[in-house]
Length: 199
Image (cartoon, rainbow, N blue to C red):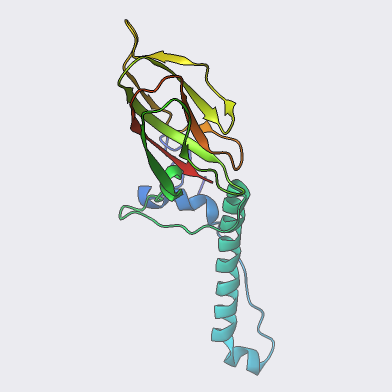
């Protein structure tokens, strides 16, 4: 109990609640009882400088603790923080920081067709795939020279005329440096597009 402050059953303490806007900061800030010993006239003269040094050290300690928590969670180095007008932490969708790529699907011959070329030291990650077929064919999606689907039947009687596939946060991930290839078993028009990112 804190003398002079009645017990609050809502918070189960005798402390006054922290304002909502700053409640997320409370865990980083702890009160410190620290005195400065003055033993000479020079120290008394320079009291403002000593107070400033202690304040800077204390604030620096708090900032260091926050950065340590963030870098431990992120793992790739320092990050910056921004707040919204109402005091909340501004966040960013992971995909917003990636370089998005897209490519047209447009061919009318059978065989393998490179839709997105491989990039040295990086992987293609496909987030959406849309295409239609103008006639009967089997479509196989390939990670370079290796198929990652079986031959899918399109365009025949009672068969679909196309495909719409959105992967979102679970993209098709190709092998490093390998192109995205579509194989068509027949010489029919295949039209569409693919989106994704390379990292």
